[in-house]
Length: 366
Ligand code: UD1
Image 1 (cartoon, rainbow, N blue to C red):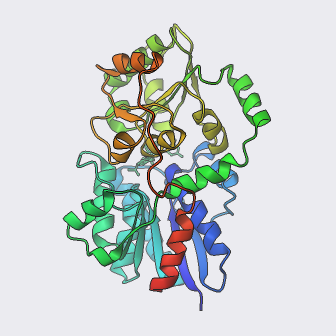
Image 2 (image 1 turned 60 degrees about the vertical axis):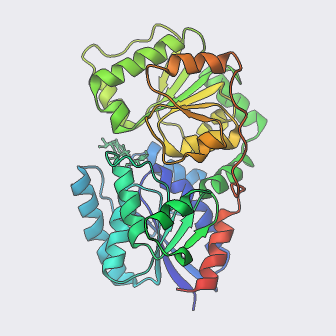
Image 3 (image 1 turned 45 degrees about the vertical axis):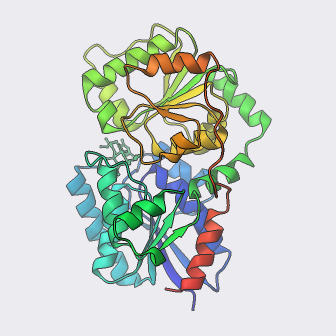
C-alpha cells in the first residue's frame, strides 16, 4: 500500500517548498499517495494561486480558506479545519514546511491525533523569540518525528535541544530544488521582456523585499526605510515588489509616499518573474528568509535588514550580511564599489533535496 501523505502549505514561501516533493512523490504512485492541503493563510492571487501555476502544482485537494487574523485566530482556525481533514483522510504521515503559522497549527493538530509528522526545513534558529516564526519552528521541531534539515549547523541546533539524532536527516535546501527547476524555464527572451517592462538593466538595479512586522508594522520605522531606499535610488534604480502587509502600512502614511528618485514600488511578482530579476541585481535588500538563501545560490550580494538570521550559513558561506538602517548606506556603498564577498554554494543546495527526502521516507516507512 502506498504511504498516504498530506503535504501542508499555507503561505507564499511554502509553495516553492511543497512543489518538488509533490512532484517526486507523484512519480512513485506505488510508494506514495500525496494529498495537497492549502490552509488559505495566503489567499490573494499574487500571493497564492499564481505560485501554484508557476510551480506546476495542481489545484489543492483541500483548501481550508482560513484567511488572515490575529495569530491566535489564524492558528486556531487552521487547527479546527485541519482536524476534520485528518479525521476523514486518516493519513499515514503529515509533512509540514518552513515556519509559518500553518506549519505550527498542522503539526500540533496531527500529533494530537497520533499521526506522524515530518518537518522539512527543520533546525533553523534565530534565537529571537519576538519573531512568530521562531516560536513556530521550535514547537514544530520539538514534536516532529522526522526532521529534514537544510544546512550544516542546523543538526547541531536540534541535538542541542535534545532531539534524538536518529530523527534528524540532513537533506539540503528544498527551495533550491524549485529554483533550479524554474531557471530551466526562464530564457533570454523572457528576461528581456521583463527588464523592458520594468525599465531596468541587468546588474544595474537594487531589488527590495520587506514584510517582517519588525520592519514594516511601525509607521515611523517603515517611513525611514522608505526614505533610505528613495535616497539610494538617486544612485541606482531601486525596485520594490510590495507584500500586502507592507502595502497596507504604506497606504496608512498620512501624506502618502512620493519618490524623489528612481524608486519603483510595484505589486508582488509571480515566482518566475521574481527569480528572473533576482539573478541580476547589483544587490538585494530583504528581510525574507528564502531570499537570503536564493541570493547566496545566485552569488548576488544581499543586505538583510534584521538584527539576526535563522540562516547564518548565508553569511558564513554565502553573500549575505545583516544590516541596520544605520549601517545599510555604508554597506550599500561597499557593494557599489565592488567590495563584497564572493560566497560559495552550501553543501546539498543542489536541486536534489526532494529526491533525498523520498528515499528516506521509503526507507523508514511510516
Ligand atoms: C507570513 C509568515 C512569514 C512569511 C510570509 C511570507 C507567519 C507568522 N508569517 O507573513 O513567516 O515570511 O508569510 O509572505 O506565518 N494579506 C493579504 N493577502 C494575502 C495574505 C495576507 O492581503 O494573501 C495581508 C493581510 O492584511 C494580513 C497581512 O497581509 O493581515 C499579513 O499576512 P499574514 O499571513 O498574517 O502574515 P505575513 O506577514 O504574510
